[in-house]
Amino acid sequence: MEQSEQQFTHQGMNVHVMKSDKFKTTTFMVMLRAPLTKETVSLRALLPHVLQGGTEKWPTRQKLRVHLDDLYGARLSGDVRKSGEQHVMTFFMDVANERYLKDSEPLLQQALDVLADVLIHPVTNNGAFMSDVVEREKRTLKQRIESVYDDKMRFANMRATEVMCEGEPYAIPAFGDIEGVEVITAEALYAYYKQMLQSDQIDLYVVGDVDEDEVSESIHQAFTLPQTTPHRAKVRVETPSVQEVKIISEKQKIKQGKLNMGFRTHTFYGDHDYAAMQVFNGLYGGFAHSKLFINVREKESLAYYAASRLESHKGILMVMAGIEFDKYDRAVEIIKEQFEGMKQGDFTEDEIAQTKSMLINQLLETTDSASGQIELHYREQLSQVNQSVEALIEQIKQVSKEDIQACANKCQLDTIYFLKGEDEHETSSI
Image 1 (spheres, rainbow, N blue to C red):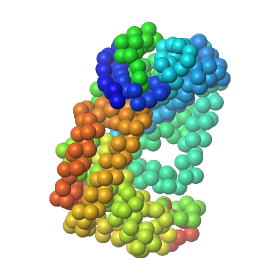
Image 2 (cartoon, one colour):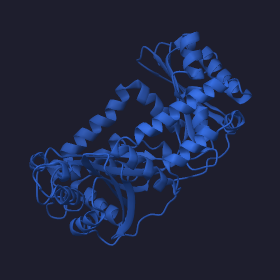
Image 3 (tube, rainbow, N blue to C red):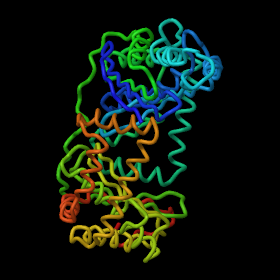
């Protein structure tokens, strides 16, 4: 299998060409990142959808979609997410590779033209985006924000993060808020968009069976970007030690309680103990053989679900469990017990080996898709750490029981958040 990588800079944009004959399509991904702030989060959440609403060449969403269909059903999408305290806007495009088609249409160039048009040649009117497009996408974004309130698992996770990270940018939801979306005008959004092109850190990925020189030439033809002065803010922001555990409960009309417990890990992607923290999380709550799943869900039947998840760009581990309202005290107690057990080394070599195997399989599965390869590479860019998948796998293999215990002892419980029913009386602990 042929695989190689080339990087260059074009008008301030970092270009990564990942040549691979593993895929029959060519995948493009543009990432634009800036610090996560309350002032810009709603604008950024709205922008990728407005930009797909039409370009100078294809002035409506429908005409753009018809053109994509003509390119052998090319796919285009855009969205935002937060990675640590950075807000990342992503445009994804996937197109057939002309090398595997009977026709020799220049699909690579045409796909890059579409991507460049969406990003830097949107349809406008008198120095503003089209107001009908902006209003339509505002309605859709508000519905998306409101849908979080209907999904109580997501809502509890959002609220636990807001409580835990109060005063930190990470507390800000990636899609902004209703009030922030409401006040956006077509003029204000366009003004921010122009500023964003100049100040965001922009990365363009191209993955597929491509000729690097051809890709370079096509990018130079398609993308005419303004002179950029991108933010150089580091993703990593050290978190303070926990002085006191925050315990918060809130009530809603729900039938099942949502318990979230947030820990500060003080470990970030690229740290010397990052691999050990991954193994710790896998053993504690990351997989079906984990302590939380077996003891909280299976043995004690305390939870409908019980799991833990790492946010490695923020140094946070979040435990999530769906429980009966009256099981709160016991659920918190046993989650803490399992955490103490991890500190004491209450796990076997077989469990360690199983966890390592599952983590390694996850990584290898991620590399089986073009978008997965991009995500792994971009994680390095965000953290300013040069670490290959092979190197990370080797580090996972070398993790010892003592390394896992050290990670457990490093973690600090920061927040306990419980979402319960409106008719529930206060429990003894809340």
